[in-house]
Structures are given as structure tokens and as C-alpha cells.
Amino acid sequence: MRSGRESGKPADGGWSSRVALTVNGVGHDLTLDNRTTLLDAVREQLGLTGSKKGCDHGQCGSCTVLLDGRRVKSCLILAVTLDGRKVTTVEGLAGPDELSPLQAAFVAHDAFQCGYCTPGQLCSARGMLDEVARDWPSAVADDLTAPVELTDAEVRERMSGNLCRCAAYPNIVTAIRAAAASR
Image 1 (spheres, rainbow, N blue to C red):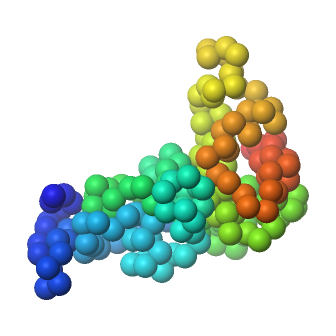
Image 2: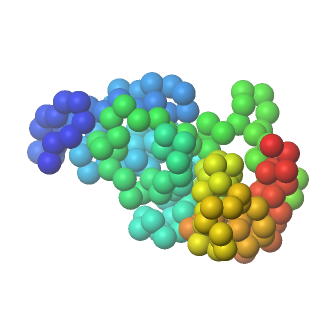
Image 3: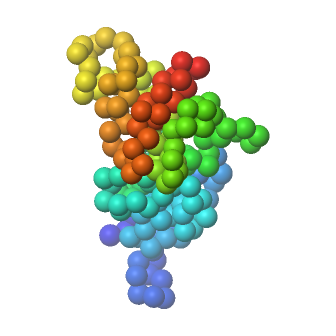
């Protein structure tokens, strides 16, 4: 299958494509094996190792990034399908000199233990807070047309695609609600 802007057969016998991605505000022109996931592209081609490879099946959420502002599991998306798209990894959440309010809340509320899942948790939380700001209902919403109230149950449901092996869930919920309150 060919996709992306330009395709060609590399010397190793596999197929590759050229893809333009904007990652954390910086444009990149990449030539990638067509089988390369977005996760492998950002980690191995761009050296942005914040996003973690956990289960490699989209079940743990460690690889969550923002694609055009919406959270996605980067291990499930082929990079060659993303020509011209914008990606934000955990490295792109902070400002040049300070943590984002969400990252600061994670630190202040001890919302990480080993830290392995934290980059995915942070990207997912950023996307989730944007969904709440747009009043997108979740599975726990009683009224699909009412404004979303960010309760603990709402945060838990919206973050249920991100697993934490250390079980820092109570602190993650507290940190997300604190960050939401500071918006």
C-alpha cells in the first residue's frame, strides 16, 4: 500500500513513503517504512522518547499523544497516513521555561510513581480537558446535552484508557481536577 506524499522501494526491499509531520510545532519531512507506527516515528526517527511503548496493542495508553489536538494511541496509527498532520507529544506540553499547569498539578499532587505511564496520562488528560471544555458527553453523562461537570467519576471514565501499574489513580484524578480548576 502506498500513501503519504511520495513512495519508493528502499534498498532493503521494504516500501517507504515520505511524510511531512509537524511535531510539537516543528516541521519534519521523514522517509518511513510504511509499517512504521506514529509511536516509532516520534521515538526512533525524531528522538522524542517521552511517549512510551507499553503494550503495543493500544490497551495501556502509555503511548498517548495528541493528533490535531485529539488524543490518540500512537502505537495503533501508521505514520504514513498522517501526512500534513500536527502531533503533540509530552515534550510539547510544557513551555520553554516551565511546566504546563497540568504537569505542575501532577507534580504537586504526586500523580506519578514510577512515571512510565505519566507521559500518556498527561497527553490524555490534556485532550480530555479540551473535550470537557467543549461539553462532549462521556459514558457516565446522565444528560447528553447538559454542560459537563468534571466529577471524579467523569475523570475516571474519560481516563479509563490509560493504565497505571503503580495505581496512582486517586492522585491522578486530584491533579487533573486541580489543573481544570486553574484553567
